[in-house]
Each structure stands twice: as C-alpha cells, then as structure tokens.
View 1 (cartoon, rainbow, N blue to C red):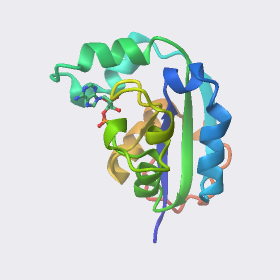
View 2: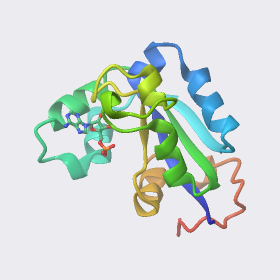
View 3: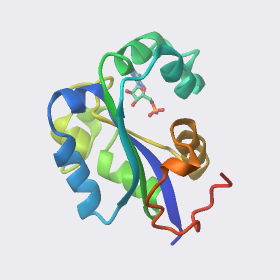
View 4: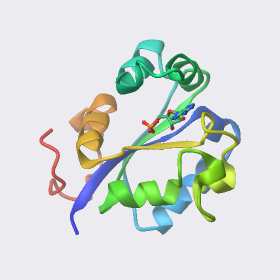
Amino acid sequence: MAVEKTLSIIKPDGVAKNIIGKIISRFESQGFCIAAMRMQKLSLQEAEGFYAEHRERAFFADLVKYMTSGPVILMVLEGEDAVAKNREIMGATDPKKAAEGTLRRDFADSIEANVVHGSDSPQSACREVSYFFRKSEILRPCCGGQCGCKS
Ligand code: AMP
C-alpha cells in the first residue's frame, strides 16, 4: 500500500466542543503521523476557494458561513492508504448514517456540523494540502517525499 498525505480539518464544532485531543488521538492511534498542523479562522475567501467544487450546491452559502464561524484545526496526516483510512475513521458525511465507532457517529450533530473534513481522493488531497500548507510548513514529512504529490 502507498504512503499518502491527506488533509484533515477539525471543523468549528469540533474545536468548540473541546475534543481536538480526542480526535487527534484517534488518528495517532490508528497509525497516522501528523506532518503539519495549525489553528486558524478561515476567511470567507479561503472557505469559498476550498469548497469551490460545491459552489453550485444549495448548501454552499451555509457551508462557507459555518466553516468561517470559528477556528478550525488544519492538519496534514500521513500514513499508508491515508485518504481512504481517514474517511473510514471519520464515517459517513451524515452522522445519522455513520458507522459505530467513527468520529462523526460519536461526536457530530448534523450533516453540516460534522466535526471533521477529510480529502476524498489522493488527487484532492494534493490540492487541499497545498491549498493550506506551503512545502516549508510540512515539518514532519514522515513519508520522506514518497507520497505522490508533485508539490
Ligand atoms: P465533502 O466535500 O463531500 O466533504 O462535502 C463538504 C461538506 O459539505 C460536508 O462535510 C458537509 O459538511 C457539507 N455537506 C455535504 N452535503 C451536504 C448536504 N446535503 N447538506 C448540507 N451540507 C452538506
């Protein structure tokens, strides 16, 4: 299996609920390495650009408003099969449909306030990681440059 990078965001509800540590602990205990991390309040432009693929969706304005409502934690996770594995740990987008033991099943309140974001493919992971992090900010690249992204 390939070593990959994936972008993880602890959304404003996860930060507000004071469960940053619990969430990170799940990632670490499942074998992920945190290669980069920072807390930030996203600007409107940053959130709109990040979710640009959803621009035409009915929920776009609410999503952007919600993602800019409070600080988030931005992280680059690395590990084998990181993109798929992270999505498994997060659970389905709608917490009502999320499997037992997943982050969203355990901590999320709604499809919007669903605690975490994770890249949905290795291609979007490369885009999303470089959207928020310069190469020089990835201070602990555990894969030693083996993980597919060009930048
Ligand atoms: P995704 O790019 O699939 O992760 O979707 C981005 C985010 O948009 C999700 O994590 C949800 O918070 C939100 N979202 C997705 N689908 C819906 C929906 N049908 N209604 C409201 N929010 C949604």
